[in-house]
Image (cartoon, rainbow, N blue to C red):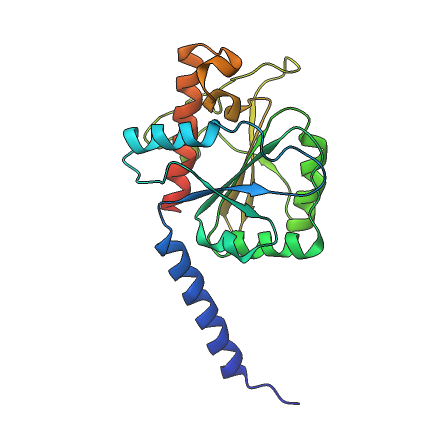
Length: 222
């Protein structure tokens, strides 16, 4: 059976249009990623609401305080310009979920992953499922994500101590665009939680919230 190339291009353009429409409709909303494998995707329950409140106040966003929870394989992820992910344990994406996440990210979406300690050895092979040809790269301090409303001249701040390692911000770049930001040995999401949860100093919490709002600001702009 012959396939008309114009029909294919027309269908592709319609898909891109609706994806763009979806992102613009929900341009000021965020979501939390649910995943399988046994890891606690629901960790740090006060983190995202606190970050949203800070961002609404300090960078003039208009995000609903209670973030939506979305599954990795759901088409609902296309409704959100940024999705947050955290946890301590195992992560597993099916091929369908990995493909769904890949389509989301190359269509304009953004994923932030916060290693809540123990996530690293699980998330790296799953990201290879999403982008088999891409490698996590350490993001230079000059990158715009560190230079939004708030400036971090030394890169990602250290929030919670685990193994006495330097904090690092890693990224996946697709066609030159940062589509996934991964904070390692920083634990930004711990710093977003209510003060009494981890007893971080006000200064440490402020740095975490400022960096988090930079991530939101960057995702909304790009």
